[in-house]
Image 1 (spheres, rainbow, N blue to C red):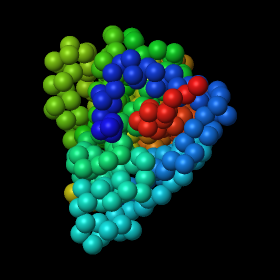
Image 2 (cartoon, one colour; image 1 turned 135 degrees about the horizontal axis):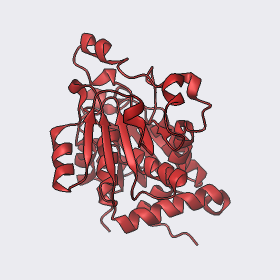
Image 3 (cartoon, rainbow, N blue to C red; image 1 turned 45 degrees about the horizontal axis):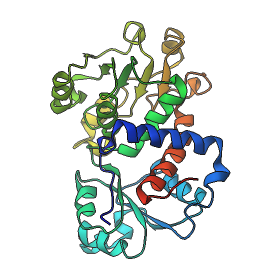
Image 4 (cartoon, helix red, strand yellow; image 1 turned 90 degrees about the vertical axis):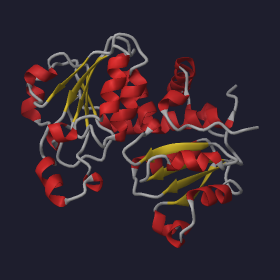
Length: 308
């Protein structure tokens, strides 16, 4: 059989996505039921650039399912350092593992790998393009916190130009009803034009603002903060100028609505003050835990393993 891959959150229909999120919620409640479903299976974590949460959550997910892990954590520790192509690496890894998760700094690299792969390939982040498993994590977190997606007002703040988590989340949420986006960024870090054009084509309301203040936050159900990504900038001067543009601190939270939940794909740098970590609206560490459950459900789904 031709393996099924995950390159974009849109690779799943709404119905498939609902089933996956329901399974992830059940995993949280009944972990023992899933503890041995991947015995004898292996996941290859092929990470060509640094990662903490995504790589470790994939590994934890497979081990929680009773499977095993192999792979590499940087391009320098793989044969990429010798000039091996992504396609060749993937063909070899297909001989050793049952499923693979790939992160790569070049947009489209996981897709190229999937074309030659004999096993399911999961895009674990490709450059500034997509990060579909973070999106699945975000959706599970939002559903757990709010109970639904329809009618939500979502604020996305920070680096909206290079933030692949932002691009994927906008795509995924755009399929639900009565969604509205507030895009908060400096002019230099606005969402790419193709994202704005897509929202207009779907008649999804959005506004772009520069300030993160009481007026901007007044109607938000979710505020999704992002860091300014140093690794995506071409020069240090631009990064230094932009890195502290937004800082969410206690003063801002004091005027934020009680219903507004704070999410962040992590890692954070300065954009969220540690003084609000204990605020019940700050849910970014819970969000990281949800990432394990949703990746467990994804592994089972792509491997076609039935849950009794």
